[in-house]
Each structure stands twice: as structure tokens, then as C-alpha cells.
Amino acid sequence: MLVELSHVIEAGMVTYPGLPGPEIGEHLTREASRASYAPGTEFSIGRITMVSNTGTYLDTPFHRYADGTDLAGLPLSAFTDLDTVVIRDPAARGVDVADLAGRDVAGRAVLLHTGGDRGWRTPAYAEDAPFLTEAGASWLAERGAALVGIDAVNIDDISPAAEGRRPAHTILLAAGIPIVEHLTNLAALPPAGARFTAAPPRVAGFGTFPVRAFAIVGPSGS
Image (cartoon, rainbow, N blue to C red):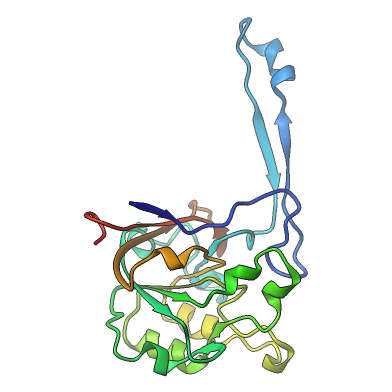
């Protein structure tokens, strides 16, 4: 069974507070295209203008570090068909070591199911949003997680109390561990055994891009 884990991208929607929403339109309309083709043949060529942090997206090390691996340099194995561990119902707003302890995360996609996606596209989405603590990020990096994802506005605490620090990004991306933010529908996944994919295009000099994130659950995923 295939499980959709991505939000839909729509014109004007806000993903992260303060960043512009995407502008979606047409470069070539069906009506205008008719002049170039045989009768009855027409096409639409769309145009989209957006920041890279739109919808459900993947961060590469280049997002945080100027000399880090970018989207073009990230191998397919970094975000494709990864064995999955789902961490549910953290004890507090910050997902910490106590929530992760006892799980085998080495070589796996660790998906943090916090329920933060319930506020998607509302002001509540960014208010007191769940996040991964600095200690939790260090624990995952030290144990060789392959990828870390979260169903919230950011993997770091973005509240004023954080004073602009981004320890989870800093630690995970320094270790070469991609991050997927703004996931959804993680409740549909089992605690372990699903196979996770979140594939971005190969864009040189870019650190972040929207993905179609999904999981396979069942005979091919367990």
C-alpha cells in the first residue's frame, strides 16, 4: 500500500511564516498553443515561482553549509526506499532522547509523528510547534540515522525563546543526514518497517526543494 505523506502545493499558500507563497500560472495557454499544432492538438505549459522552502521539502547539507552537498550531489540512496522508524507521541513539545531511546535508527529514516500537521495553513501551525531537541539530534547523528523527518513547521524550535538557534539543522546536516519538514499523515504508518521515499530534483547550487514524500506499507514495506 502506498501512503501519501506530502502536503498539496497551491497558489498563494504559506508554508513557513514570512516566506512568500507560490505563484502558479501558465507560460503557454491551451488556446495560444493551437496556433503551433495541427487542428485538435493543444498543450498547456505551466509556470511556477516559489521559494525552495515550499510545501513538504527536503533539506540537504548545502542548506546550512556553503561547502555542503547540494541537491545535485545527494545520492538517490539518501532519500529513496529507506527502512522507517516512526517516533510517536513525544513526552513534551521537544522530541528528546527519552522519546528515541531503545529504537534502532541506524541506516533508517526516522519520522517524528508529533501531530503538528493538524494546524497546517493556519496561524496555529507555527505556534508552540513541536521540534527535535539538540540532544535528540545529537543522539540520532551519533547512531547513524539515514534521514530525519517531522510533521511540523520546522525540525528546530522557532519560538522567540530559541533566539534564532537551529541546533537540529546544524547537527544533522553536518553529519550528512537529510531533513524532511512539513510531512503529514504519519498516523497511517506502522511504528517500523515501512519504506520511505522523498525525492527532490537534481538542482545544482540548491540546498532545499519540495518533494513527493510517500511510504510503502505492506508486503513490500511490512
